[in-house]
View 1 (cartoon, helix red, strand yellow):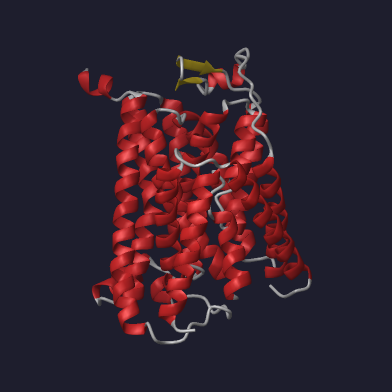
View 2 (tube, chains in turn yellow, cyan):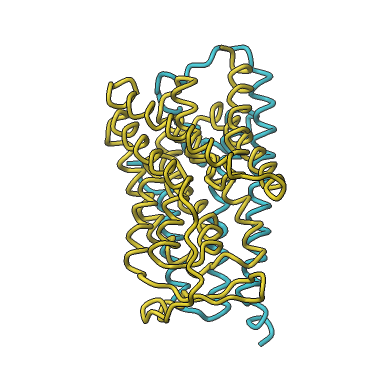
Length: 278
Length: 128
């Protein structure tokens, strides 16, 4: 395959990944690495480097829109970014030490989790919880514009959320994904932050988390411009189109279909990792 | 003091939003320009991504990337765009730090400083 053909195919595939990722709210990063390694036989280290770069692009693009709406909580984001960036550094350092088989296996397991997460119905905890002393001291509690005016919330279980965030950062650095699903889980399930605030704050944090490991990847020579270029431009274009379409399409079946694709990719990654093909 | 009163959380959010959008747009533009040069020159050569060799030294360091860009090498220019992209969240953190300082929120200035240092270490520290 010539460089031109390869660039066009990868760009088209990345566009699709970015589009579906934006429509389902799962991000395209999680399918990019399997797409590049399984379909194009790209070495997983190059694939992770390219995916990481595209994750920064999409999350920064989306965060720009969310932040202006005033839904993201920048204090929660900033405080938890300490955990995610430290975790990302650890993940990036681990990536150079563990075998590619091990990375493929961990990747497969994270994909399985994402497939499950994509199908799970959204829990609604509308009830206002009492303020937690630690969260109050850290000034994490906030409010956001809702259908009927501003709604305030009190953040709970700060240490558990912080620890989960460290784990999310480590996975992001090891696998080159945004690990948005795990970030949302930490905020919405553990810290009891309203779902809307959790998703937009997670998006806000993904770029910084990915940047913390991208620097290490760049200096280690894992980021190839010829590969990262079509991936980044494709995913970015796809996610921008996806964000515009979001208001007009029903995503229920799309989420179901996408989670099925993710589950299949998970099995394929696990198989390749366990049999030593990756 | 009108300067500090202006720096509310919402104000920071607006500035952060603009910065993120600008950084990503600039990065995409540079990557796109580099891509044209790269594809015109190397579009017909075969690809080999199944073997991992790691990037040459000039595409790994900030100085090397600038040197390549100066010589109008396609891969170097793409890498410069990716560097701008990686720097965008770093600039966002720096801007937030300034915002928290203007609000005299010392605790959050410290938190932001830690994140900023971790990011700087990642970009400039030891590769392993």
